[in-house]
Image (cartoon, rainbow, N blue to C red; front, side, top):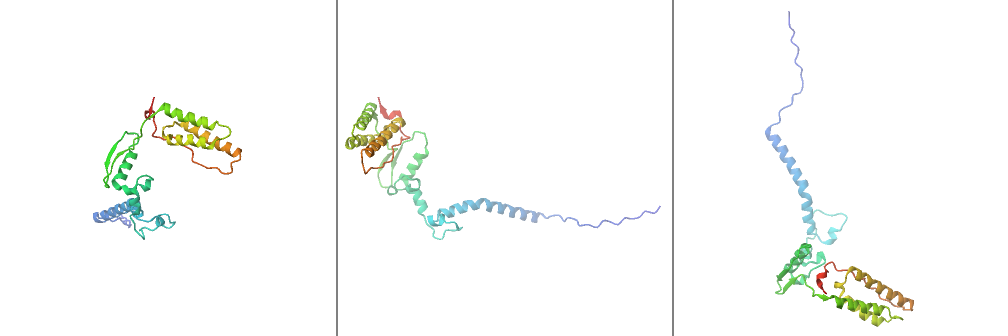
Length: 214
């Protein structure tokens, strides 16, 4: 019996990828991932050297046109965080930032700054007798109840309250603000043509009962 030889199927065969080509491909992929990962960091660092006008533009550039260290000075001076004193130097302002980052952990810092001054941070307040605080509150209530309105008497009592505002509880702050608002309502009702708008008092978050002496 005669056997017929079938023709081999002609097709494309995959050529094995050399180790060198595979290594180059992996290196290129790793480089691409690194560029994508590091670009935001590079842009952030580049932005830190830009003046505010270049930062706030709608068409930001990759590199600063007018490099500046003003942003770093603002951080070291404390002006970026709304606290600190640029005249005291970086050591003082760094201590303030460290103190604010301590959170609720009791922290006291003794600092000798570059200008030779010695500070104890935080600026510890003296304690106040609860009876004295109650007395100035009673004086304000009495001044607010005078009819007709006695502006000089009221504000004499109110200035004492402002000086002791740190020691007031949230409820006492609300009462003082209500008395102040009522005082001006009564003055306008009595025909006052000029009045002064002042910001209401706010409770101090650092105030605790430890500052009051019974």
